[in-house]
Amino acid sequence: MLGAAHVCRVRMLYRRILLLHRLLPPDLRALGDQYVRDEFRRNKTAEQQESERFIQEWMEYAHVLQKQVSHTVVEPKQKMQLGADLTEEKLKGFNNEQIGQLYELMQEATKPNLQFNIKNASSCKNS
Image (cartoon, rainbow, N blue to C red; front, side, top):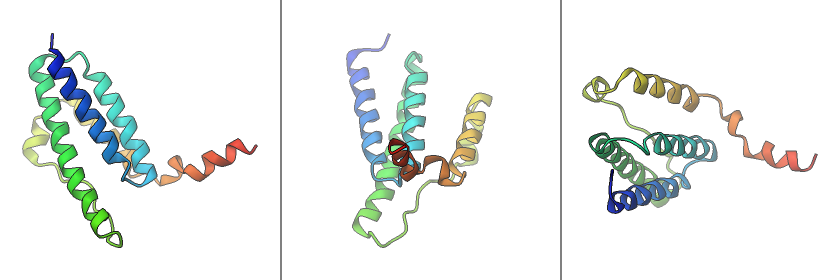
């Protein structure tokens, strides 16, 4: 069982990621928020070693995302460059389930953003 300090650390990381997602375009924010919620929920009962790796990877994600979105805040006219290439070494460390999740995430992220069109959602209220 993991201690209270670990739980606090995970919650702080979770909040930090969701705060960073507020700086993303709406469609990417919706996708990212849902993915983070699912992943953190899925890993709630992970063993300590697996949990530490999980936290480390998400901390790295948060660090990279913060760098990427902060450039846009400083230079608003500059196009937001998001994402990072996965190294072959990292890919080799993935199991089949993770490869499948990565593929599904790539498919969702590259869909036209009509799926997350916020303007359409507000028009449903008027119906």
